[in-house]
Structure formats: structure tokens, C-alpha cells
Amino acid sequence: MRKVIIPNALWSKIYEIKKYLIFDLKLSEEAAELRIERMENFINSLSNPVDYALCRFKRWRAKGYRCAVFENSWIFAYEIFDEGVIIQDMAHGTALIE
Image (cartoon, rainbow, N blue to C red):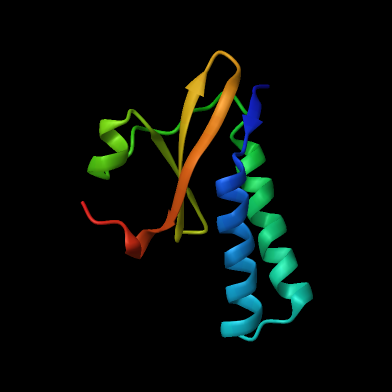
């Protein structure tokens, strides 16, 4: 198993999603927490030796990022290093333009 490194900037994005779920979508705090927990579990699953394909989105592909899709909506861009996997960015699929 590889180590998964999650930069603080990514944690900030995840926290913003949680706030959005609670305050804009009016989910309960418990429901939002469960969704974020599923997202965190997905991120941690990238420690498995199976790798996703290179991203099809030009700006991430140019950087050599691989993309993993969470629940058909959220896309995580990551790189593989000797130290493990570094999650470089994430975005909602509708926000990415080819």
C-alpha cells in the first residue's frame, strides 16, 4: 500500500464542500459528514496499487496527473511518486472544460 498525501489546500476544498452541503443544500450536519467521510475513504483508496488513467482534461493531463472519479461527480487529480500518491487537485466534473 502506498501513502496518500493530501495537501492543506485540498482539505480546505473538502471543508468548503461540507459547508456547501450544510448551508446551501440544507443537508443535516450528520448527512454532510457522512458524505465527506465517503469522500475521504475514496481518497484513501488511492493507496491501492491500481492506478487510474491519465486525466482527459488538458491542464491536468499536461502536468501528468491521473484522474479518479468519486460518485460520478467529483474528480481527483493525483500524481504517483516514490513516497506515494499526492492528491494535487479536485473539481466537480461540470467545472472542468476540455
